[in-house]
Length: 146
Image 1: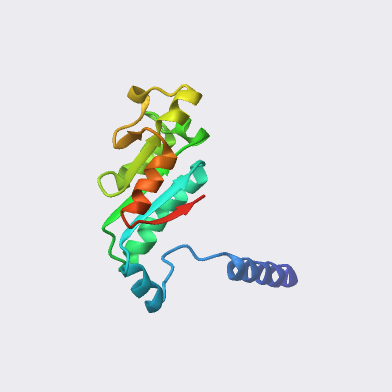
Image 2 (image 1 turned 135 degrees about the vertical axis):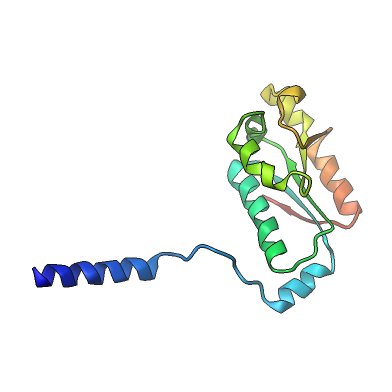
């Protein structure tokens, strides 16, 4: 019985040691200083995972003291079908409403049969994702595409 307890204890210690600790990641001072140089960010994405990831990145930047002037997500592709009222993404987005701008590609909406009135509040429809990204780049945004 004593050996079973020791084996159990060793296994628990190993599991605890390998579990990733959830919480804030710390950005180094140089990264924060570099990011301060251009405080406008835009992201182009097509998946729910990236939508949530980019919103989580917003939290990471804020928690590390990065000043954000503008933060915009340009959404195209199948994820557009998940940006509707009463969806999981609507609930997830509530925390960011008024802080993060989301532009939804009207071409993707049309192809996927998503009507503007079915989108949840806080989203903006843009004629095309590509033109919106070019516009953001012309206005000095750091841009990433997922």
